[in-house]
Length: 255
Length: 220
Ligand SMILES: Nc1ncnc2c1ncn2[C@@H]1O[C@H](COP(=O)(O)OP(=O)(O)O)[C@@H](O)[C@H]1O
Ligand SMILES: [Mg+2]
Image (cartoon, rainbow over the protein chains, first blue to last red):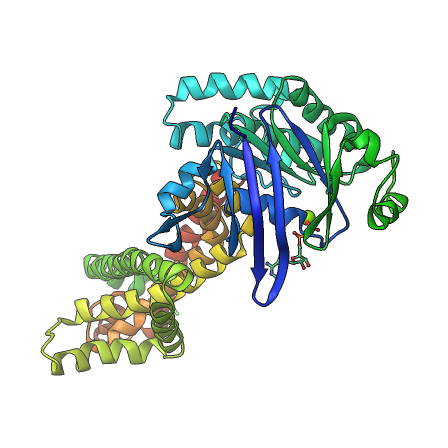
């Protein structure tokens, strides 16, 4: 079976500073991988390379054996065409820390936009799919609300529905609960847990250690642009092999 | 001051005045429409253009916005003919106002587009929208809402600036009024009357702007 995601020796620089210093990561279909690590360790950057929100200078990313973002022609590595990259972005879906819902569109229209304009579905088909996903995240009753009329937790759930409705192979979550008031965190985590139960493949950057422990079948600990340690959370969280991880776990809260 | 003789004169010149008013309105309308269309291009170039184009447009907007409108009007009328572009006063005036309008609209649009959080573009990208689609469905609707109040202001400024066309002999409301005054010697009431007409036009624009703003406000 081919791997769903294969990252090899990923290098990313901002100017002169290298923020990813050779990252490898494999995921099979149905895997739920949580990425933990202190702020600035490169978690977000790794996610953003996978869907080409960031360019990267070295290494390869493959999804279902398809090389993402770059191609090598006559020994020269070059960025793929924008249209091609736009198509490849559909292989993944992403939920952001700041939700990034479109404020001028209702919850429903946020979800249908991509279905209609990108997937070229009819309005009715798009609506059916969008309503199904809004129902899944518990917001069907609010489908005609604008983002400004929803709580942070509700907005994030709509944002997740918007991403999932596009039927990606892999979902990327970047600290989706970090901008939320504590009492709204659980409703969002619950949505992600439900997706995990359905077998959705997910790569999740999170600071919620308890959630990572419960939902992940593998955890990656990022440390200064490298993978410091990875493995089963039940082992890693109990008996960390590296000093770094032990330290990090000590400063994290398991709520 | 007696009202009777004035009303009498007013009745006599009503069509002439109306024609002047109409010319003011059409000058303003043409300048706003052409200037806004041109301004959208300027704004896009300022925001997304390649660096040389951006510099060029920055130079254009800064130069135009730093020049008095009257100078633009005079230049458009007197200077363009020296390079073989023969415009009548009306055309020259509309061109000057449109150019003026475009520099303001361009700058407004640039500001509005750049004020949209980057996350909006990114969210559009990750659902597979091309840049073109992201602009049309995500960025433009937000930018337009943001620009609207300032744009209404600019439209009202265009109406006021249209009076400057009287200098090059365009028979708009102000020049028409002045001609009437030179015949009737009733300067005060006719100037007042013209002022009132300008007020009505701009008040209408403002109300229209408020209406559109209300219609397009995002509930929150
Ligand atoms: N646009 C950028 N320009 C320069 N440096 C950046 C930029 N974005 C992130 N960085 C740097 O890259 C490193 C990794 O950032 P990030 O991936 O956001 O970390 P994390 O998500 O783990 O907190 C940090 O040191 C950060 O300062
Ligand atoms: Mg981050």
